[in-house]
Length: 425
Image (tube, rainbow, N blue to C red; front, side):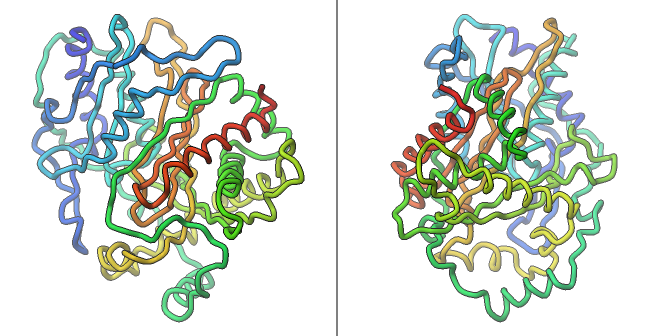
């Protein structure tokens, strides 16, 4: 701990200097005119914490054995997901899990408000952090880091026109103001929307061998990991829900960085995402035996994702925010007590590459998790693959909205299905 305690302030100073959003906080976010303000300084004593693991550092078992879930990290993340941010401090926290007898190895949990970053921003933070640790040469220690003068990177409205076609806009206006068509029969979305309640979290790791087999099988079947995961989660929900539920709505997030100006890169921190949606029916996912998989549904899901990408930011939900008159009332308060629209989300930030130089710090395992959505999906599944080749699913849900027993059963079905798809024993 002493060695990392020495490196921490210098590495964090480099992070804050490179990413202006780390010294910015949202102000008046309960009004129609929210804005960002810059903290004069970031007090590391308030945002960085150290915790000793209760168990040994979890590792990947040799052979084809499943990796052990990181229960210390799971407990830490579940706790952090239920701690709000306050305007007197930065809107992020860095929680370090230390392992007894392993001073060269630690787990860094970057916890941040969605206002200052999207899923890929988490990857950018960890990449910068590792690079900063390698570059540290100073032994200076300090807790107060002056905020940089570098301006915030532009938001998506400033760098993209967010166009809306007449047909798309007319359809949304008709649904919102005239007739929505009513609730779809057989749709499951958990309980009605209620005030925020505690977030629950489960981490579900999969070994490198399974992931490699899954990637190869996806290529053979002309689909992708994300599309397969959506299909698997839908199938697993149907397998554990009463037969009366015959429809599920899935939502996902796509990074817009690939079609934004060069000032926005994969190493940038900010919020540049768009949404897409997919539907699943019980009949299309039902198979005569448990030894086959509905590849046509996984292929259809890939086509939906590719169609959304091809739009390059055109006709998506975020483009409609300009027409909202009262964010708090229309998007939040008015929804209390009503049914949700979405059943589950799969958000995949992809692979975090490992450093090839053994003399440099490197990222091995990676976890991406999110708070349960108060007005969004009943279940959130966040996905990341680390430099060790292991893929981790993070299931999160609100207390009361979804029963713990249902999520545990769904996780069991997801494990079985992914082993089936990958041909993994």
